[in-house]
Image (cartoon, rainbow, N blue to C red; front, side):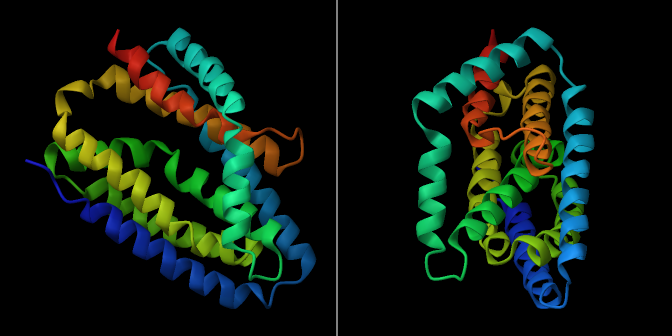
Length: 226
């Protein structure tokens, strides 16, 4: 039987509430504080991504998935298409570019983490929402920092968060036999490398089209089956 993704509902609500508070206090932040918060987010992304990347069950699968997924994303112009979509969503805001950056940054941080993958699968297979409820608390505080820095776009990240995370829960509930520990480990490691790339991007070390690597998650899942 399918399991309704209540964990994702609570998580999305926590991000929405945290973002509202972040928008309120963000107006009081001077520019130097915004800069230090953004650098902190970038450094935290590097740490989180590296710790996740080390959880791989098969390094070759992760490398293969990242390369093939990146090529697919580039051929589909995934980054450019998603950025144009999010900029249209934020066209009525003061800064559509910042809206897009905030939404996409928040989505990657909230949805590429190991707690997202493992928590959503646990809910789908066992009906255990403990990890997602814990993640909701962490994401609420993270969304405060992100929204105070990036603005309104972070608030709207609750929509793709719910779709992605809830979809993963429903997929796991219908086909739980496919989600073996090696697959979960490879998905976590691949997601970690994507977050690592996000941290590099935020810190302006190198401008990386991070969203083009999203298909790597699907490739990692398929490759893990074999």
